[in-house]
Length: 132
Image (cartoon, rainbow, N blue to C red):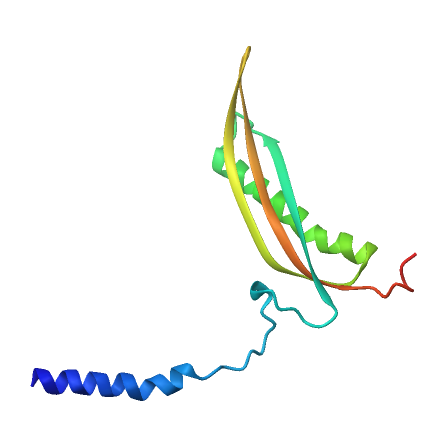
């Protein structure tokens, strides 16, 4: 019985192999593998935000507020590109980290929330004739 189960398992695996080896049509551009739509370029920028900690408030709420500020700045990167050199812009990747840093000073310590990350965008550039 055990031999039959092993043979049956191998048979199912071999039957599934041709199906697994077929390519699935790529309906969405794969920006992560370096492929882009024609006429598009990748633009990457790094954003960093430092906010002093208010000792009277909850740290987690302040970190959340700092992250929200970071995401507003990250989202504004497409707006900046659209105002200057882009016809269209879409964020394709976003990374971020948030840290609570304590800095000793002579009169005590200072605490800051640091949020930093990278924004990657797929951008279609304006024609050279349209740029001022």
